[in-house]
Image 1: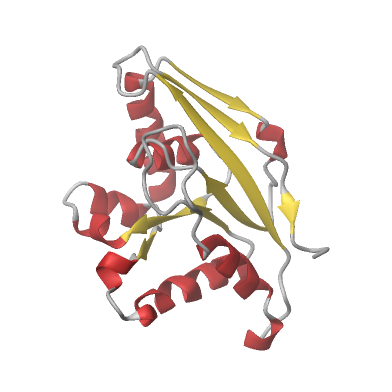
Image 2 (image 1 turned 60 degrees about the vertical axis):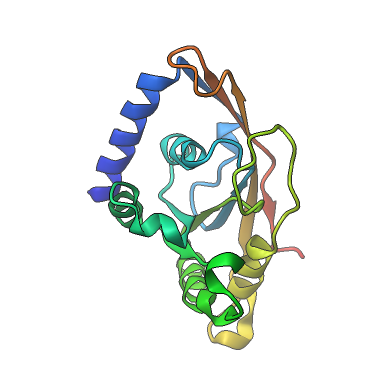
Length: 188
């Protein structure tokens, strides 16, 4: 119920600010099974809002840990079932800070759920792809690892491109969500 309410609220906010959101390739989204939606990160929180609004499956977003302490965003992230990511600047020299994150994503994927990740790891306002982080690959491989107990789970990686025209311009901007071909790990 909370997720449906959140999606309705997100769609309402997007409709207020964006003249149009176009989705290309919606039929490419698998309706079930373990899924990692990996998108470029151009427009901060708006990127996640757009994906939550257009992907017809429940997505479990990953978000940088400091956002969870924000008075407005924190409760919305928890309502969405988001998982905190401790980047190097937050985790310091303690790589175990993300152990809970990887355990939760593995459990979500093994249960046939969907994860939303931005592999660039940070917002990039220029239309240039940044160096990708290894998180999406680590999550996919962990869900398939049969040494952790249970059978390996095939995971589908869904590449998504987000493009914005006149972002931040009230009622003039529009967004295009380009959904790429799904890549299944079943035959890797």
